[in-house]
Amino acid sequence: MMPFSAIIVAIVLLLIAALHLLWALGSHWPKGDEKTLARTVVGSKDIQSMPPRLASLLVAVVLTGAAHVVLAFAGMMPGFLLPQMYRILLVAMIIVFSARGLAAYVPHWRAMVPEQPFARLDQNLYGPLCLVIAALLFDVALS
Image (cartoon, rainbow, N blue to C red):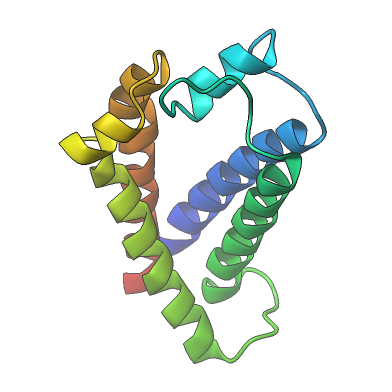
């Protein structure tokens, strides 16, 4: 099952990285303007604009690195770290994605990111997606 889980989670991570790269380049896709995009994907109270482009670029780089960790751990591409490092990074990724997924349902988080449509999407899409990613990473780690 590991190759399937590894491939699926790597594709998902790379697609999310590509979105962040688009935003780093100044795109407002899938929305028509920056304010609407920020309210859709960031959701902070009274947000009017996207975070700095460098932040989106860094997220894209980290997510691309995460995809590399998954594929290298699964033996599907060469790695450049010690094998134990890939396991440690994979466990860290499971913790991060689990925490982010669960945060969507925590009242304190809800108060920090109340803007719509983010708040709704967070509970219906972003949070569950993070939990699915964590589950796929867990499957990869166990294999």
